[in-house]
Image: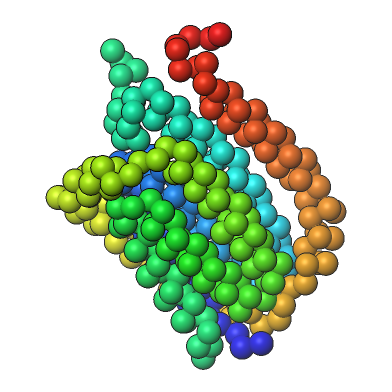
Length: 102
Length: 169
């Protein structure tokens, strides 16, 4: 196998995380916000697997499995919320549901 | 120099950037699936074939199909894309872009100073992952099971139709 410098893999993970952050902050559609959270979780998982590979242990891959579980649970609840938002306000705009203070 | 890694990383970053700028949700989803496939290639290069398979099966398969179900269920159509376009245009990009560039600069500086060594010199087999997962990390498996059950119950409750009319049934 051809090795890759650890810092390069971590830079890729950081770039993916930054792109996901831009998506989360820019988009107003809840579905796109959830997609961006998925991107960021995936980038964090990539960093874990890279570190596990650097020290040749399976721990990084185990933590990736936990990240995967968290992502799956989060996306199920998040999409249910998006569905309910669309039913009540007929829009996916996250700002539509800001009348808690009224 | 591992050409496969750099090619896959470039594909992953470009397709992710394309995904967050699309106005059509299904197009964004397809770009994101390309990105997840590229990340799966990166995992293979890093010697994690089990994780590469899980990335394709669970991320690109299950989670993205869940998104697809919801997008099809909501049936946003062309007027949805037009609204997205109006939301995306304008100065809303500047602040988030500056923040993300700053975050990336900090992370890059931290990585440049303190991440020696090379990854992917040898593969870690699924067997090793399984032994570790069901040994020292057994409590984590139990917690993950509880989290998934809570997610299932929560998604079922929040998604119910009779919540629409307001108040508990």
